Length: 318
Image (cartoon, rainbow, N blue to C red; front, side, top):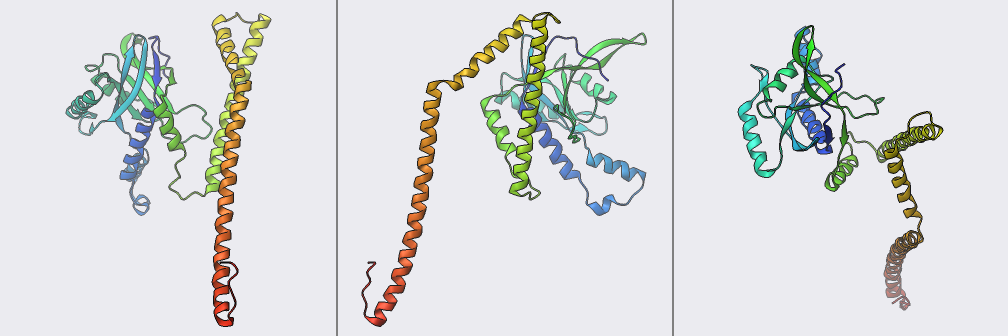
C-alpha cells in the first residue's frame, strides 16, 4: 500500500471529474465489448484479451486551479495512449490543452487520470512524462469494479515523492486525502443523473426500492458519524482527550443553525405553502370531476335525443 502524502496540500474534487471518467470508461468498454459467442472460445491470449475488454484502461487530464495550498480539480478531458510506446499522445494533448485554454483561461493542467484498481509501475512513466507541463502533477485513479460493501468513493488521488528505497532515490506514488466540492449547477446535474431511468428496463418499484435504499444508507452513515462526534465530545468533556476548541466552535455553529427551522415564521410559511398545495390538489380534483360529469351528461343527452326523435319527447338536459 502506498504511503500517505506529506506535501500538506488540500485537494478538492468536483463531481464532474468523476462523471467524466465514468462516462469515458463506459463508452470505451461498450465499444470494445465483443459478442458473447466470440468470448466463449479461444486460447490463453484470447482470455487475456477478454479480460482487458471487460476492464479497459482509459486516460485523460484533469484541469483546475491552485490557490495557495488548496488544489481544486474542476474538470477533465480525454487523452489518447500511443500503443507502440505506452505513452500519451503529446500532439493530441497539446491540441486539447490549447482548446481548453480558450474556453477556461484560468484553468491549467493539474495532472492526469486513469482507471484501475491500483497504481502500477507503468503509470509512473506517464506521470513523469507530464512533469514538463506541471512539475508536481496529481494522479486521479478511479476503480470501475463494483463493490457493494464499499462505503467510500472508488477514487484515489496520488502525488509523487522522492523516497530512498534500498539506498536508491526514486519516485513513488503516495496517497493524499481529498474532499468533494460542488457548485449549484453540479448538484442539479448529479441529482438529474441519479434519477435517470436505468436502460435495463427496471420497473418503477425497482427504482423506488433503489432510491429508498440509497436514502437509508445515507441516513445510516449520517447517524454513525453523529454518534462518533458525540462520543468524541463526551470524551473531551470527561478529560480523556485534549479539548479541541475549533471543533467545539464548529459544533456550536451547527447547533445554532438548527433552531432556525423551528421558528414561528418558518411554521407560518410552511403551513401557508402546504395549504396552497392542498388547494391546488382540490381544484385539480374538482376540475377532473367536473370534466367527467360533463362527459356523462353529454352521453346522456345524446341517448335522450335519439329517444326523443323516435318518441317525440323533449330533452330536459339541454
